Length: 152
Image 1 (cartoon, one colour):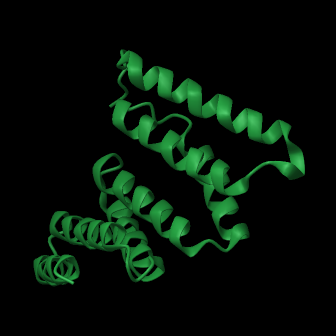
Image 2 (image 1 turned 60 degrees about the vertical axis):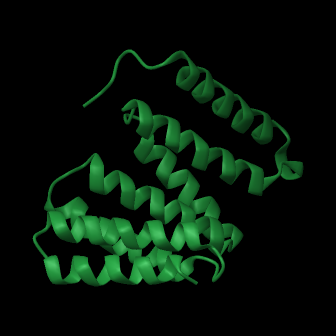
């Protein structure tokens, strides 16, 4: 579903994030790559929240390449969670759901040991995707592990 009438705050957010990436690109080598990746992550959220998904696959390729080139496991984990979320709730057919499980579990493994938010949400997404695939035992296992993660 594509939402044609997005909230003004999201439209402004998308414009802001796009302008921030443009400004960082104009700085060349001096541009802060961590800030650029964080901006990509937030830009992704505005696309998901508004249903403006036409450019998300291109954004995904850029963000993933940047996260991997930086070797930033924590941000790569956050990126994987966002990808899993999109496959779970936007592209809802079996192939994206299978990929959502893979991405969510990868995010869980990449996340910093103290990043309970990323770890628990990754396990939630793995469990929810397994539920939608009819793999209930696996879903329960992921949800149980998520519950234990939040109790540390």
